[in-house]
Image 1 (tube, rainbow, N blue to C red):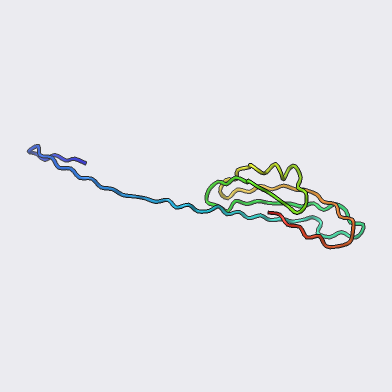
Image 2: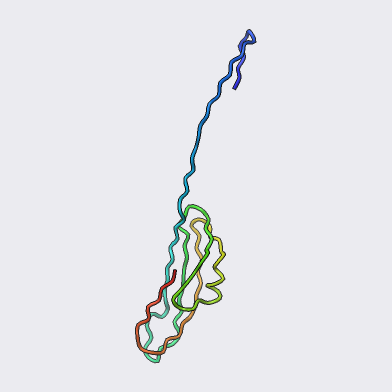
Length: 108
């Protein structure tokens, strides 16, 4: 900045201000549900719903989606999908179980 007075004399000065933006790691919430949760023998088809919610402050891209069951093409197609901050997406897949028992299942 430069100034001039009524005699034509000048003066100047500078000022500096610095800002820092720090990185915030992304966060996501993955939920999984199944319908129906129980069937009597002879069992049948169970439909799983995976929902991915971006709880981050910025857009994220899904780079991997795995499950202990085989995922549907609909679920696999989510890899590469971008989610806006606060955005969600979901997919379904089915699994047939015919033997009595409890079948744990994990997605990540």
